[in-house]
Length: 209
View (cartoon, rainbow, N blue to C red):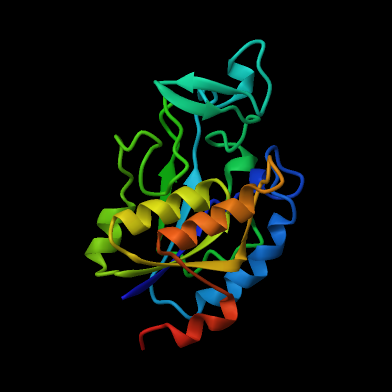
C-alpha cells in the first residue's frame, strides 16, 4: 500500500511566516494535485511549546543560526515558530485538507527538537506515524513538504531506516538553505541512502492500483 506524507506545510514555514522557506508556497498546488492519487494521506505538524529549547529567544545572547547543545544533542537555534495554538502553527489554508486522514504532531517536548515526522532528534520519543502506517499496511511512502534540508530530510532518513520504500517528490519540497548548498547536499544524501527522487509527474508510474 502507498501513502502520501505531507511534512509541515504550516504558515510559519511559508512566505510571511516566522521561519519562511523561500518559495515554500509554490509546492502547495503540486501537493494538492498529488492527493487524489493516494488512498492514504498523512500530514505532520510542528507543535512547539513557547519555551521550546530550539528557539533562539529562549537562550539569552544567542541568535538564530547559532549551534548549542540541547539535551546532549547538537541543536541549531531557530526563530520562534509553530507555537502551539498560534496562527503560524496552522496548516496553510491553501493546502487541501479534506483528504488528509491523520495529522501527526511533533516537537512537543521543550527539551528536544523533532525534525523527523517519526522520531525526536535523539530517537527516544516516537510519534504515532510508524504505527499508523503499519496499521494501514503501508510499505511505500511518498514524501513531500517543508523543509527539504531539515524536516523532510530527517523524515526520509527515518523512513528508510524503518524499511519503507521511500520516494521524495522533488517538485513538492523546498529547502531553508541556511547554507547555500544545504538542500543539494540533503538531496544527494537521501539518494545515496536509498531514497528514490522523482517528480510529481512520475508518481502514476509507481502507484499500486
